[in-house]
Length: 348
Image (cartoon, rainbow, N blue to C red; front, side, top):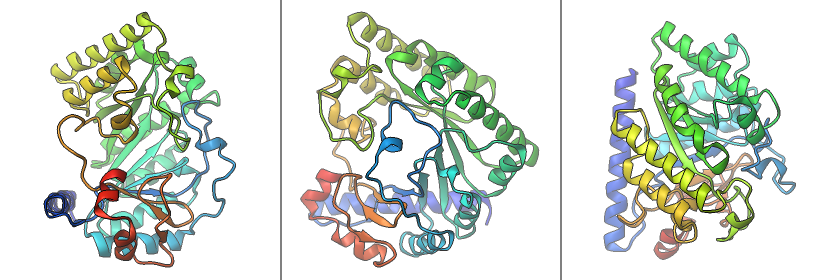
C-alpha cells in the first residue's frame, strides 16, 4: 500500500468518525468511535523529567502485554476502527526491545502510527535504520532547549539532550537517503525555564529541515490528582509579572514566526489561548488539562479518546474507571460501556 493511499484512507476514516460524532451530539446518542487512540505500551522510563510524575509512581501496574498480545490488540483495533491512527506512548516506548516489530506490524495492517519519545531510545545508526524502515508515520521527539544544561535539568539524566539531538540527526539523514515519508515532529513544553529558548528552537527546526514543531504549555504533572492552584508551587511556572510577561512575549514571538511561515503545528488561535493561560491559569485550566486549547472558546469537544495501558486495561481518561481489559473484551463492547452520553461529554 502506497503512503498516499494509506494517508488518504486514514483521513477518510477520521472524517467519517467525526461526522458520526457530530450527529450523535445532536440526537443525544454516543455515535462514532474514539477521536484518538493511545497505546501506552510501557510505563517504564529512561528519563526522570521534573514536569512528569509517571516515572516515580510506585502504584503503576508492572505487567506488560507481550509482543504477540500487542499485535493481537492492533489487529482487533484495525478490524474495529478501519485504517485509523494510533499513538504509541509511555513511559518511554523505546524501552521495549520489540518496539520496532510492533511498529512494523502496525504499518503492515494499514494503521497510521505516531510515537512520542524523549529521544533517548535511538542510540545508533542500526536503530535509526530500523525505525525508518518500520513504516512509522511520525516521530514526535521532545526538545525543551538547545542548551544542554537546560534540557538535561528538565529531563535528566545528563546526556539526554545529546542523545535526543543525535537521534534526530541520524533519523533525518537516513530518511533523506532512503526517500522515506517518515515525518519528524519536535515537541517543546512552554514554561518559565525555557521561555527565551522557544524562538531559537523554531529556527533550529527550520534550519535542519524537520517537518514541524508542536508546543504545549506546562501543566500539572501527569497522573496526579487535579488541583487548579498547582502552579503556585511549581518551579516551572513563571512567578511574578516580569516572568509572566517574558513567557507571553515568547508566545507572541511564536505567533509572529508562524505568520512568517515557520513550521509550527499549533494554530494562531491555539497559541493565543496559551497566552491567555499564562495570564489566567485557573480560567484556562480545563482546556489545558484536557488538551483542548485548539477549540477552547469555539465549540464543545467531541467524544474523547481511548487509552489502552501496558497491562491491557482500557479507559477514556487516565484517572477514569477501567472499562475492561482488551485481552478479555472486544473494543466495540468496551466502548459501549464507557458512560452515558452526558458522562462521555464530561470525560472527552
